[in-house]
Image 1: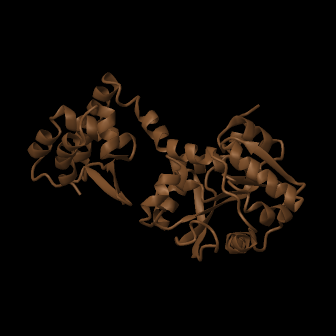
Image 2: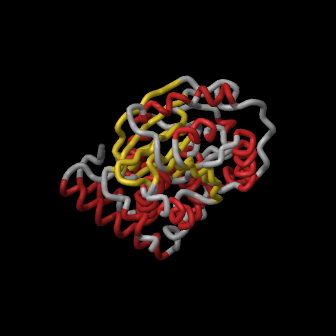
Amino acid sequence: MLQPQTRADLFRLLGDEDRLRLYALCAEEELTISELAELLAESQPQVSRKLQPLRSAGLLAARKDGTRTYLKAQPGTSSVDEAIVSAALEEGRRLCRKDKSLARVPRILRGREEGSRAFFEQAPPTTTSTTPALLGFLPLLRPLLGQAFQGLCVDVGAGDGVLLPLLAPLFSRVFAVDRSPARLASCARVVADAGLSNVRLLEGDAGDALVHEAVYRQGGAAVVVVARTLHHAARPAELLSACARLLRPGGIVIVVDYLPHDDESLREQGDVWLGFAPDKLATHCKEAGLDPSSSSSFPAPAGLPDSHLSWQWMAATVAVNLNLGLSEIH
């Protein structure tokens, strides 16, 4: 909530060019102090000091993710305040375009995923039987009860292929999508060992044109599974939007991910986010044009490195007509 006592205070607060830049950058994306410092080529203490008046005034909202704090711009609370803040935001954007800091935001976001890419480029450790873990994933099928299992299922971020023996018997085709050749090699071993003749491996991301082309030729996906993948995405809503565009009419996205936790060691294996509160996950779905229909927490499958965390699933259907994205390829 906006705190300045008078509009004169608000004008004074927003009369500083450095604060205008910071506000504009935080309006563009939820950013940490260290990311803002990198964008503006300043020290973190300097940026923190300049941010504090904006935070005190309620123009920036702070959200914790483990030891990291993310800041996001908030609007004014009345029509007049909104007009003042909107004008300040436009001026801040002009300043950020001039110093090129706004143009550097996408690079900062890509940097969030560098650790994830490096981790998954390595060959995964040799594992024993995946049957116990596979049984632990059975709750994610709950949104599918009562539906005919047919058509195409796309496993986005298939990783080591642990879900493929569960999904392959339920669908006529399964596409295992991953951007890591090392992880796809692991998927290939699972496919060969289990004799999963209806599984196809695709290297890339959910938003890649080649993936969309392959899915389009199957008439769209009945189900897209995003299991333990969303927390690796710099922009979770962007990944979910790409998944939504893979769906055929009436299809669903099933997300499996962690509830919020404080295990910072998972940053070492490329986790960008330390889980998601259910309302935050629902917000990401809605930003992606998806309508969450059901959700639940469930015990983590045993025998996995992340079995000590609390897990959740959420099912969502397309809230707006995103299936046009498939036909736009041609």
